[in-house]
Length: 278
Ligand SMILES: NC(=O)C1=CN([C@@H]2O[C@H](COP(=O)(O)OP(=O)(O)OC[C@H]3O[C@@H](n4cnc5c(N)ncnc54)[C@H](O)[C@@H]3O)[C@@H](O)[C@H]2O)C=CC1
Ligand SMILES: Nc1nc(=O)c2c([nH]1)NC[C@@H]1CN(c3ccc(C(=O)N[C@@H](CCC(=O)O)C(=O)O)cc3)CN21
Image (cartoon, rainbow, N blue to C red; front, side, top):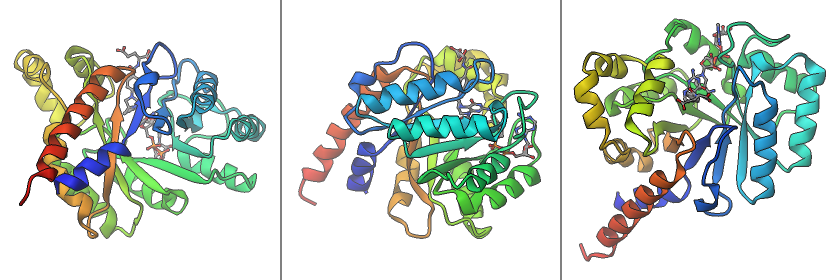
């Protein structure tokens, strides 16, 4: 099991914000780096960041937010740019904007548009919600996933701190006939107060409602947060063919160095275990 977890550390996905500074030089060449989309700034900074990352030898994955595109022409222009930059994978998401900028209100609409254009990227990810969505009812996100599934090569789960919730949700995803592998979305090693602020802002589920009630104690506890407990609890499933859990997607919020340090340290500890005779 230690070796499964050890291997999974080499193919983790790192999510960054399109603006601000991030120590991308600390990542191994070819690492998968996904770039979020900001409803305020629009899709442009995300595309520009993806171009830059790709030019620097990383596997760049822009988040294409449906609600940030005006029309088919705008979408086609973006896809042209990504092609030219050698970007072949995208993460399709609705976008947090209260109103769509143009013709596409949700991920499915954007996926269909790319299909109509004959321009579906080689690899496509979509979002999933182990604890439900802040304001979308469950039957809505579940139906959306079923409709998007035929386009999706994988699903990334929204931030969740509870291993059991993720496990049960992932099993349900499979039972509903969605075969795509799941990358478990977890915060990297990031500033605790910022993490709590973000969790409250994007309206995370039960595990954050608990956090909200316990703000003081939780700030202290989160000061020592790393994804390690979740990794420990979930990594046995990496080797289980019945489980869709395929790896990790780390929300870094541009705080790369703490996350990479922790990963390297964990890798050393795991290699130590693996080398020991049984
Ligand atoms: N940028 C990111 O990495 C992430 C963003 N989100 C946010 O979660 C929401 C759902 O995204 P998807 O899973 O791609 O859903 P989706 O595109 O599959 O849509 C599911 C249903 O929710 C409605 N919907 C989606 N976004 C909405 C919004 N902002 N306001 C009102 N109705 C909305 C759609 O019209 C559709 O009926 C979006 O607001 C999205 O931006 C969630 C996770 C990650
Ligand atoms: N609904 C939703 N939208 C997202 O964009 C999103 C999720 N969920 N879940 C997973 C991650 C988390 N992401 C986030 C969350 C918060 C910010 C944010 O608040 N950004 C601010 C500054 C953050 C801060 O420094 O406090 C910004 O101006 O970019 C950005 C991306 C991207 N992803």
